[in-house]
Length: 537
Ligand SMILES: Cc1cc2nc3c(=O)[nH]c(=O)nc-3n(C[C@H](O)[C@H](O)[C@H](O)COP(=O)(O)OP(=O)(O)OC[C@H]3O[C@@H](n4cnc5c(N)ncnc54)[C@H](O)[C@@H]3O)c2cc1C
Ligand code: SF4
Image (tube, protein in one colour):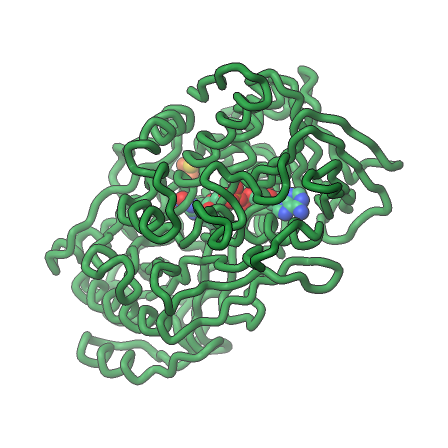
């Protein structure tokens, strides 16, 4: 069966997608709006602003890879599609961060779970950051629009065994669980969303908004890194960019300078603050890059007496908010439970141990169930998150010390996951810690987990959700951006990605970013064109 590749067809029909690694000289471009980043925020903004009749240029550091390139192989996908080949780490190397670096950004490689911003999170933002216009009711029409656009809905196929085990365990213990909505259309239930969807079923920015923008006349320049904004008084005048070599790591000598009336930054919650820091953007309160949040994520693996085949079938279709809802939002850290897709490279590099011991764990791979806990960081005075800093050559580095407040949640999440996995019939449970040799029952797990030292590198913490760093707030002393994403101190600059969040979300963030980006980009379109913004869907 031949699968249509919208990019091959579109480029043949005249879409302007420029590969900067093929440049042989410097270039200058002019636009009404230059957008940095083509992921969740950048994609939505590109479609809305192009449909509004504005001349849009989208700059993307990563390559354009499409369904024709996606071969369901981790060894290809991580170097091509992820920041730092999927090995990006926090400054002390304690947390491994997964982020996309390709056209479509993290949406090209994400796992399709779609949650609206929880009402508790929005209420906290109102109380603590004065974001009174970001209520669940006010956001609802924006979520409705992006849900229609990206076909976000409940999925009527039975969950895979990995997800079913979470559901069965939760039923056994009386813990509430629910199905997860997904942004897919005609999904083949393969389970390889993290390597780029080979069937174009996943409604990522790669197959929805970016093609719509290109069809409407936008220009996409990929393998082009935005280095800095040229600022004059209270405005950005131009964006200076560097062409990248095909493998995406080393720069070429060619520069691209983009002049625009307005700049939209959507380089993700590490890339956007870093670009502003490199540009010397005004930051009188020294807030830029601060309060950057992850959902620090813990993992537990359980060997079952039957095949689980966690690599097959849609990932993350069942979840539980029990351990979020049972604590106050600003109390001890709560966590959301899901089960990840399991592929051998990602799994073995996350799992503890090496040599023979690690080999024995991996030999059980087909029978292994994995569960993860997303810790809701940023709602308590003891959870300040991290800060984006500049490293060698201006490259971003996220400093994210794991506090005792977070460690407490790490231990509680291990206990909760072990209890669920034993309830599902696990023969042996391993929480991902170098000194955990596996537990045969809950009594052993309880004693073992209580005794594990909570130390960097011993306890493995990961995250695929990066938020904050250009946080919104009603008052300038609390946030670099206002509730419309406008950067304070630069009249023609809008931030439009996950970096806007003043805390983590407490749910997988893509839908929160889509909704906020749709709202803010629509307002910007109205300001720039003096006409009503076009409907997204
Ligand atoms: C493996 C994985 C699984 C995930 N699963 C889910 C899920 O199931 N559900 C969910 O809700 N969320 C999920 N997420 C998270 C979600 O995809 C992200 O939160 C969301 O895409 C972030 O949107 P963004 O616009 O902030 O940044 P991104 O989507 O990351 O886009 C930023 C883009 O900017 C580009 N960029 C960065 N710096 C520069 C620069 N200097 N110049 C030019 N371009 C630059 C990057 O290459 C990237 O393409 C997952 C993420 C990953 C990595
Ligand atoms: S599970 Fe569905 S969305 Fe994910 S890669 Fe397979 S076909 Fe694509």
